[in-house]
Image 1 (cartoon, rainbow, N blue to C red):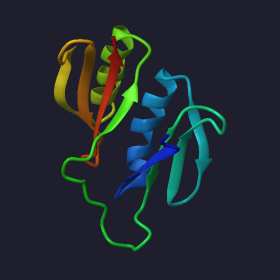
Image 2: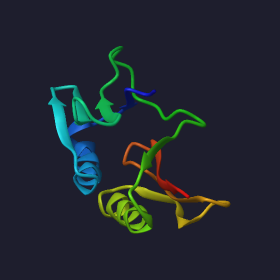
Image 3: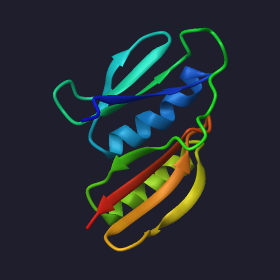
Image 4: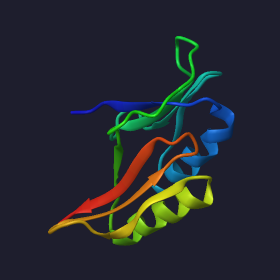
Length: 122
């Protein structure tokens, strides 16, 4: 149902490497790359993530209660994505582990403070 998710940034070039590394682990790459906007994904594949400078010119801010969930292929990839996030300027919001029956996830923030998680169901 979701086509893609866009997150705001105050420094696109500084924060793009965080998403380059996450995308590479998930087998995708940049599909759009402009001066104020970068999108990772595939034109006919799963939903992608975009990072953008706000159109109105105001500073990007983090949404309270907003989180982007990235579906991993297995528990090992959940751990790997968490490690990659932290190695690329992200911060930990919850180490990898079970979060109730049938749900395994790790939580982290990108360098701008946007919250993400990597998860598997089942």
